Image 1 (tube, rainbow, N blue to C red):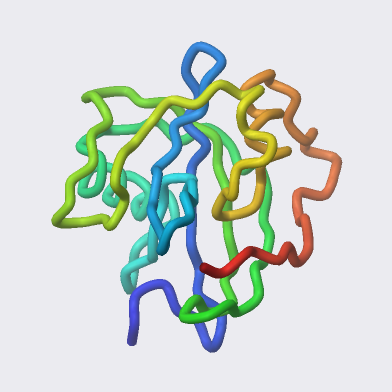
Image 2: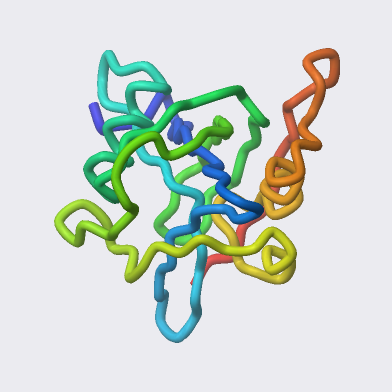
Length: 157
């Protein structure tokens, strides 16, 4: 079984890490296009979503994290080589280490703390620019509201 795949939907937890009004993003280059990613990754068999996030961020960025709350759940349909994906997006903080790209575990070209105001207009995966901005300001969805955002299309490069 491939990591993170349940039936025909890939499951991908990710975490919006916030520090001093900024969000930690991973920067990728697809062709000539810059794409930004919320850190996260594929679930290994028998692994919880939280354990996946802790492992992925340790492997890819060399940091330990504290996961706080579920911000949202959304789907992105298949695009190019990317399968239909169920995204479970959490909020969190870095609790140890300094984020740095480990090329053995990610194709990201850099990792950057980005001001919340600069999230608009960025090609972000998953496409949750609005939710990431709200996480910075603390304006998250209350427990009584639905956190399911439905299907959000993503660009393919």
